[in-house]
Image 1: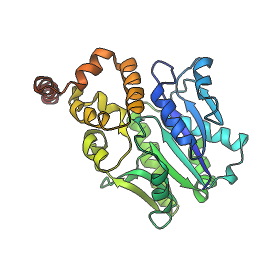
Image 2: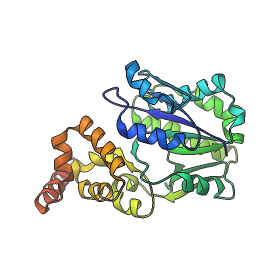
Image 3: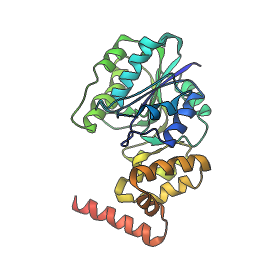
Image 4: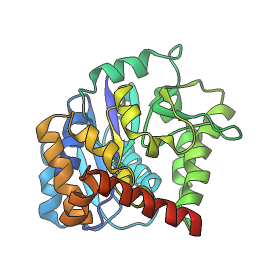
Length: 279
């Protein structure tokens, strides 16, 4: 199986962090990787990816992950032979991980659902708009070589909010797949906001990623769950995640977030409830 990964990255400080290097390196073991970041980045940072990717670029375009997917696809279209690949993956770094080897997950995704045309780690079974979560989606040749998929990507433009991006492009892609009779499947079905909130239970079910926003969601109320995951993964991966978390959110914040004393847990929960009651 020959795979191409279109990797959309974003770092608020314009850096290639240790956790991103781990993620890209894990993907590179199973296929070719093209990285496009939606932030400016110094050349020395981009050089950190040397030897791991076919191509990497970074420039603030403001079109979020789908804008990066578009640019990576365009480079692949003109810089390599798309027709040589069996599967094209859209992957973004809104998650930390992987915590486990990805080989068995690729086998399950690519052979599951009666050989689906599109597949992902997570399906959100939303009542009115069920969709594949766009942080990790695989597409077969009949999709990524089609004119309608190319038109979809080329039509991506800057939107006023991330919510509009999700509605137009994440949910919109699944709607487009259904419109063209494509079969979809996912390894996990996760309702609503549980991909953000059920950190521990999803890890125990085998999901090898956690959403980065778990570190800041609900005023830090998810700290105990995140700490559980970090305490059970490979030490080098844990260090990489903590290195970037402390760089982005501050060492004091991360230390307090991961403190699991009863007082700290109660305080985080009370802050979350206070925000919820006043919002």
